[in-house]
Length: 192
Image 1: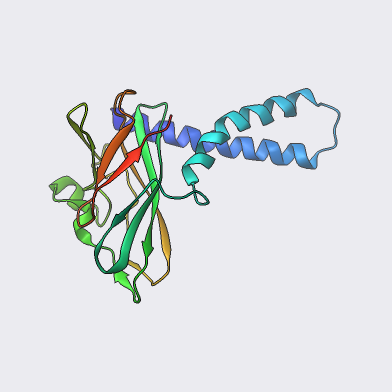
Image 2 (image 1 turned 180 degrees about the horizontal axis):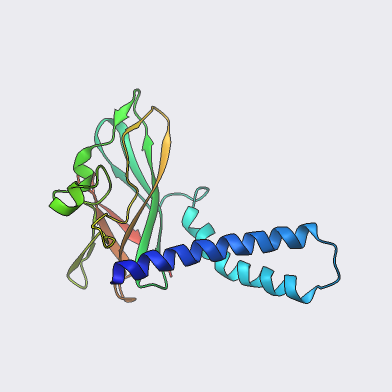
């Protein structure tokens, strides 16, 4: 039931962000005299729009960089607590090698339910060493991991954006260790 809530919450955030963007577009194009309504829409979209832009993090230096085989890197750009009680980790795969690389299927872990849904980051875990807890990737009601899926190959110099969702650790947990099969571990700082 919490997975449905997570999916619905994510859809609502996307819908609100899109609606806010459309409202901003209408404000920019319109020359009408009804100034109060567009200002309200613009300020609402600014409030909601700040979280997604922080999650994108494309211009920021990575929080951590996990090293894989043959020059494959996983650069983590943000780890943001969301209102729905989950933590979204955003980043990108980067191929620093000289040739094309296959994204390792071992990233999905070895849980039977996740294996059914193809290559993903389903095997990732977060470790809160102070709280002595390990967090596993969230799943929807059909057992699909809430991560980027369908990963296959990455060309030399290419980047592929990825995300992973976990249950949110308590607010007291600000630094956690991200573990991804076949990659080195890395500590990330949680925001929000």
